[in-house]
Image (cartoon, rainbow, N blue to C red; front, side, top):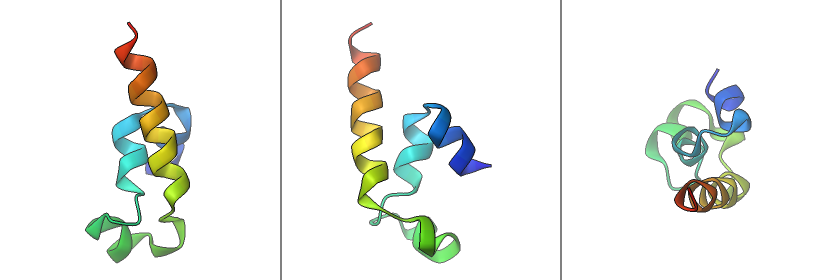
Length: 50
């Protein structure tokens, strides 16, 4: 469910899958990736424009 929300554009959910996230590494180790950090940064930047 968290992956789905992150893919739909929730930057906080995307940050959850950061490789630095303790909880991601405990529960979703295979999904932890730097791509989610980049996606979160992009989403935060888009929201800041509004």
